[in-house]
Length: 397
Ligand code: ATP
Ligand code: MG
Image (cartoon, rainbow, N blue to C red; front, side, top):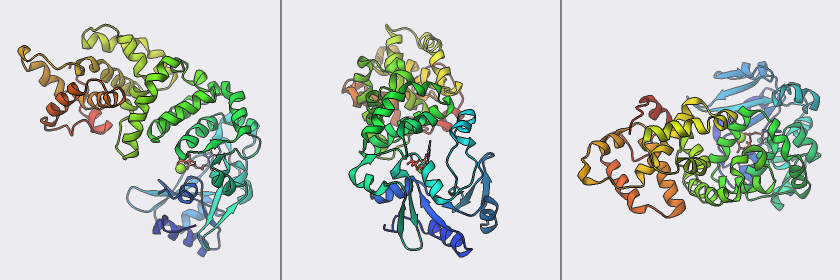
């Protein structure tokens, strides 16, 4: 395996651990991505050193986690490498009572490999001689482009149903097929997704929407029959028909590395429901309140934070105004307020995605983009979420 895609500082951390007589390997997504010729987004190191021993070796090192302690070793002011001690397999009984985090037993590298989810996520790269340790057939699966659970897939999905969601995402992201036994197990275990921890599921949802393969992931979830148990409101064919092209528009932005705020991500997912509820036109304030209330149960079930939900409803309620060029006889007051509203950039970004997905309202989009480019503080609809929130929520358009 080529060491070129591995940052120098990561190699240094592994050398340091080995210099003190410990084992040190890269593992997980970074090894998988490097073998596929992609640049990894972060690096995970595993070692037989215990957390305290890791801490002693590095100056800028913090131990995190309560049940399972692991180390963050900083390689710059805001970037760190995760260094974890080998862990043994999850005991399914304990996993059930306290979730994935209950797994707090250190183990050998073989045990560490067994507890991981998929064979291609359990490859260990030895920085000393650039060799790969493969305890689960991951290299073969990588060549065949197959995503395969380690062990019995049905048992692994029962242990942690979130793995099914990860499977759908990895297959779409990597262009892999799910193994046949895994596919059967996922369909059989689909309903268990209702019991998964809702906060973890929201995190997975954001990961899906940001992974640049959201459209394929949602199709896979539909194919694995999971969607009706997770997002029943969206699993209807008529919604998928409009949702998938909108996700594809989002994916093409994300593949160019463009930032998309959470509220816009959620709007991309939920807009067909919101739009249906909006129905005939009414004022902004009424639309906003109606959406907010009509889907408050959904927002609560998905654990969408209150502020994020406000932003989603706000940008949705602004869409009808974006779909029209204001009448010049009515004066510039409305337009000025609309353009300067803190939520406008989100609303415009979503509108643009919708235009890309449907091909409609191009002229209106050009009109608003041209107007927005003259507003000094807004970078044409690409502000970051915290900036938008930081300006406070003037509700009126
Ligand atoms: P990504 O590119 O999305 O970060 P990743 O494979 O690095 O992919 P992480 O969520 O960062 O995924 O997890 C790192 C590693 O931890 C995985 O590669 C896998 O070996 C292990 N892992 C993560 N979640 C689970 C899980 N639910 N069950 C078993 N092993 C897991
Ligand atoms: Mg990762």
